[in-house]
Image (cartoon, rainbow, N blue to C red; front, side, top):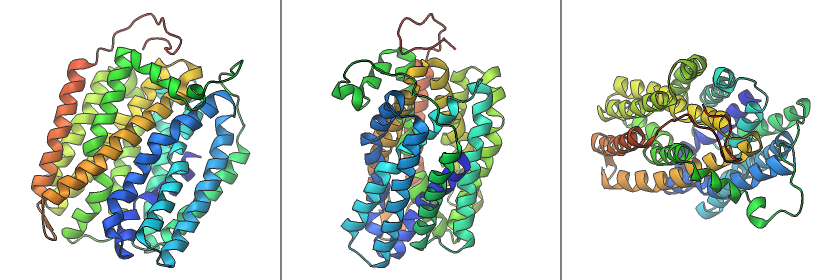
Length: 393
């Protein structure tokens, strides 16, 4: 399931910027990437609450994938018909409203089926990254990096994933609610109560804040590559996922042997190092920076998902993962696309970009987040008194 999910996401998300540029819609690139951030503000908590309270997550995922596939095909058709930019953006936004919740849904489905989340989830989650890599290689292998047909490929993969869920057990709803649900509960807004816990709050805030500088990775790394004379950008970008897979197979032992604080600090430091390599403005350092993505992503975000699985009570876990999607993919990424896009314009002189200035500026933001987390995260063991909190870990 995670392998197919990764392929479908990669065939859509990674080449989107170059597809829009090839279609003469390059100016819409930040808005197109921002669509996923807007969607993360609106839909994950709603679908997460549905999966926690009324419909098994696998069934929610099935219908969401079907709708995502249809919208992917419609977007490809609209690009071929050369519709205006605003129409293309609206279709991308609608597609994002359905595709974005699949991240938290698939994560909660897997975490509900493993007995040892910190020991097993990393290796299982690596299949999603392997799927992402495969999707990138297929896109570049078929020369679809700048073709709207990559969205056709993505749509077909979403259909395959939707059909595959029919082979999986439906599972159960974790928390049937007696009585009439309030509007706040239906939209999953009660998940905000998780922020009352100090450690939960620091984890969520750290993940959201670091998403701001990290948001530049997918939109602008391929552009930097092209400026350095590199082609087949989707395939080059997948090198970050190669390292990510290797890291995910080892993160179980790391989560057992290391304190969570050190795991996340390694992730933040890796993100800091990545943009230092980028600032060298040369092919080899840039590729070293791309490879650092695996460390930065896995140690920062996958360890955060594992933290939620260990520290949040089962009946709240889908909403907790959805809240993470909202804060990271919504608030963090939306702010990130706006900030990094504006910063790129400031660092540009006509068609030329001062990449050294650009990446160093973003690195300073990563450093601020690293310092915030190092000072504020406590990681204390305590006896839980709140129903949203699971066994201390």
